[in-house]
Structures are given as C-alpha cells and as structure tokens.
Length: 393
Image (cartoon, rainbow, N blue to C red):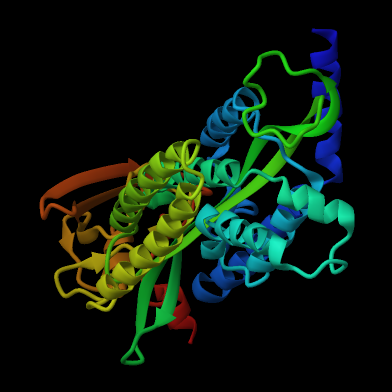
C-alpha cells in the first residue's frame, strides 16, 4: 500500500510538468479578457467577471475525472509521454483560434487517434526511436474509450446549462439592424489519473493491465484534459440550444461508448467510434446552423421589451428575469420600447413591479424593493442601446 501512496504523490507531481495544465490557465485568461472587452463595447459594462467561462463545472469535472480514472486504472489503460505530448500539441493548436467548439473531445482525441494510426507509415528516422515506440504502443481502444466518456460529460453539462449563465452579445443582423444573440460556451478541465510505464506498481492480476505495452511495472500520472464547446443562439433561446445540442451529443457519445467497449473484442471498432464522434459532431453543427437561419429571436417586439440578458447578482437576476422573456408592463404601465421601460421604472423608485410573458406565452408578475446603491437599471440588458446612452448621444 505504501508503494501505491508513493506513486500517487509522484503522479501528482507529474501534473506540473505537462503543458496542458499551464495552457488551460492561459487560455481561460485570454478568453475572459476578450469577452469582457466585447461586453464593455456592447453594453458599457462588464456582464460576467473573469474566468466565467470555466465556472460552475467543478462538480461534473471531478465526477467525470473520477470515472475516467477508475476506467484507466481498473482497465489498465497505459499512457505514455509521447502520447501526452501529441495530445497536448493537438489541443493547443485547435485552441489557438480561441473558439471553444474545437476543444470537443471528438476533435482533440479524434485527431490524436488518427495521428496515432499514421505512425507506422511515417519514414524511419523522422521520429526519435523512443517517440515511435511510445506512440505505436499507445492503446487505440483506450483512446477511443476516453474520448467517448469525455463526450458524454460534454453532453451532460450542455443539457444542464442555465440560460442565466450564457453570454449575451449585441451584433448586427443581416439587414444591418442590431440583434441579440447568446454564446453558449464552457472550458472544462477534467483531471484524470492514468498509468505510466516503469513505476513501482507491479501487476496485481493476470488480466491487468488490460492495455499493456509490455512494461513490468507502472506508476500513476495525473493528466489534465481540456474539454470545451461553443454554440451561438440567435434564432432560439440559449436554453433551448443547450438542451437540444446536449441531448444530441449524448446520443453520439453513447453510440461511441458502445463501439469503444466492443473494440476490446474487435479493435477495428475503435476507429468506428472515432468516425461516429467526428461525423456526429459535424452533423449536429450542420443541423444547428440550419435552425439558426430563421428569424432572429432577440429583436425589437411591438408587444413589449425582449430581455437579452441580466447581470449576475443584479436586481433583475434576483427577480428571476430570464433571457428571451418579454416585459409587457412595468409598475402597471404597458411598455413597448426601452424608453417606455425606463420611464415606467422611474414612476416608483422604491418598488419595481414587472409583468413578464414567459416562453409558454403566460404572464407572470415579479417585484422587488429597490435599495440605494443597487444597479439603477435593474441590471437588464436589451438589444437596443440603453436609454441613458441614447440621451447622451
């Protein structure tokens, strides 16, 4: 047992020599800075704080990492340094665009899998001998299995995404008018514990490790896996987009997981799992683009004022006002424009009573006392420019 604890400590130390660990922090910082600058240009204020792209994912991240670790250790999936370097290089290159859609496991692990398949065809001498041996001995079945589980995690988080934690944007539509949209995106760091060749742990069962590379002993290594996605919701509510794409991703992930499990008996099925993930992912994006060609959802509406978003922890956020809902009355006064909204708001500075039409077409009332020092505009974001900004211009 002391050997196992010693190897766990060594595995944790190995985490800090992996480029993906540091790149995840750098990438999250760059994404946040770019998004905050865009929010200030669009709304005159920061909507979400720094690192919001990676927040509220740690529970699923830990659970998913634990499941992957159990599969990796229990199944004896051996990870080599050359494989980790190739995976890191692929992940970093795909993330240089700062578009998180390319960090889906379907792309990072799918491309890495295809590169591993091409290693035997690379001319001798092009790769260092140690690299070639490490890459050729990496289990393709194990790579496909990890990819499928990561895609499953992606689908679960997507399906559970709250519309109050997606990122509103104000952009020009096809006709030159300002329209609103939401960016559904997340960057998740999944910590996985895998097996590294040449440690102090001896095989404890005849079948272990299942994916052996011929080493007689193994150690632990903590592997930081980057997982990301990004969807734009303009013709639909962000919640609907997240729910649909999440469920579709789950279907693809389950099919790939079944193929990966079956590849233990027929190795060629691991390639089928990768193809299902890559093609399935592109089909989901294609179907999403078709739906997004419809009339923009976040536009001016003569029946009321459409909510584009709310600032977290603002009065509007605490009143449970949701992106996409329609404000029809404020303090019992009908409103059909941003100007009318703020005029009605000023009729009672101590209490804000708002009548909202929800997604089912039903009206509901919400009210809240207004306190000194709180956001003077309740923290609601609209497609139109703010009333005060219009007056200034």
